[in-house]
Image (cartoon, rainbow, N blue to C red):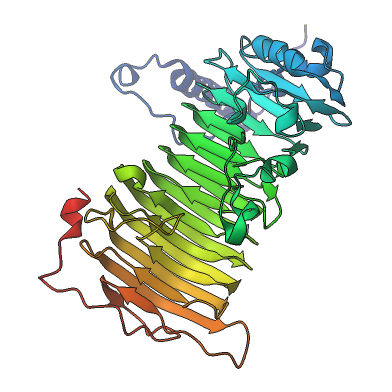
Length: 462
């Protein structure tokens, strides 16, 4: 047998290679499995290590069950009463963990006044309107035994989203023509007769709501109303009704908090957005409003009631061809407080009363003087610019005789007459105290300076 021979330097290279491989394996083994005594007492953080990508199949995605109202007997011809089919679909969707109630495109569904009640087992219930839904056509078509004050009500719902590209048609024309409506009597007065008109869509005692992307028109009364709700996001709505349609507020909130109203277009015969008693933490941004009665806080304090509103922001919006711009309105004789309100970056276009506080609000013009009033304190107006209808003062602060408005702040307010060559009324103030941080156009000389003698409204708002 022949002997294998190898030069001495090659033997050294081979031994070095074997030793290196054994050393590397030992180190790797100790790092991954932790057999060393040191690693038994030292916890290594892996926060800084790059995460491994999860397999595509392992990514969790919500699975929704779709409940199409057609599958529950809805006809969708705009004449047949489809209320029962919607109720059956709702009852099923309400019991499923993840569900979509679908109102399909291409159909028109007539619904009687009804209540969609919770609580539901669904997490993230979606009420998707892609078709058209409508109520009976006017008061004569409304069933006698059903309330005429509301149409669709969502009660005790948590975590619902109402969305879609469809249309809610309120069929309000015949309701507006009831004899009791303001425009039917002589000189805008009302006449006797039945006056109840339904709110189109009402959310009551509900939370974590989203209303997005819908079109709604011609509500008999308010288009949307949120009562005793928490956590409301309204976005990308289009709300339309004629400028002479009475009491057709776009969005009304009452005793509701943590509200966001964004990126919507509203034109109607009353307030684009109205904020009632008991509301706080409300953010309104990027609204195109008008023709309308503007964006209002109130009316508050009716029938000597107590009303508190605070932490309200209205910003980056346009109000056009409207009776009012940004308004706070209270009845005499009420109590409570409006405080911490900020109006900023708002463009006015031919608005009759761009900035107004009215503590003598009265529908009949026969209201008697009262000594008590809702306190108004800490109201800020910043970067309010545009044009106004010269029939009224561009700024009006008509505060209570007994309790002044305090801590009003104005900066970068520039309002010019919409019609050139017309006599311009001066800003109006009554018992109003505040500060002009930067001279306004037109100048406001009637606002009184804060003094130690001024009533401390911050205590009354506490």
